[in-house]
Image 1 (cartoon, rainbow over the protein chains, first blue to last red):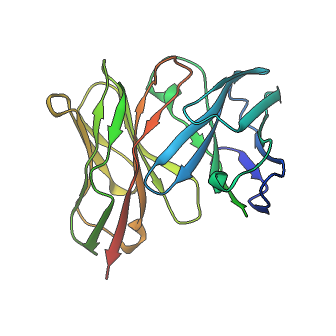
Image 2 (cartoon, chains in turn orange, red):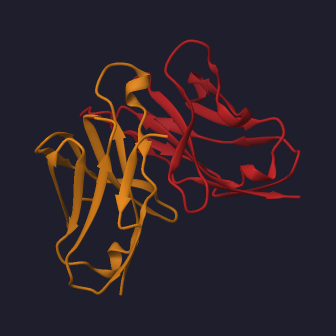
Length: 116
Length: 115
């Protein structure tokens, strides 16, 4: 299994509080991604990173920010959590390069976030 | 626009029966295609992938998928389902516009297996 950990694994918080989720990889992969998973929607990309300090928005980025100060860590921050951000959050990594093998993404175990 | 459709939200099969999960995509060029499986409370695990060559692809756990360009489909099959196959299955297409190995995922098909 790819070396990807997410912390915390579960979190309950209140509306309006800031929340930071951490993704840590030991694979030295260049690309990292944050997704949210909601019933009926599959996985939707929130933000991604293509290198240290290089990040960009995905399709559902409103209300989220990210940072990547080291290759191995990718942080997702909810500046002021809302109930609509209750979800399961997955981190994924991918190696840079050409070809289908490089396009494969490896996933972490997920973080279940509940915003009350 | 690039998209992935999994028409079946839930499927129930009996153990030992055959299985086919449907995936249709919209993509401007030849896509990379993937099937992932998610067991309850777990992350996603890659079952198989396709880019070129033989249109019938073999994966792990006895799964296979067939790419049909004329139908824009990449259906997942298994000849005999085991109770442990109960999970959610996601089809994905890439690379998404803008590169960086981004993928588009379908909404998923939840598989239940009856004994």
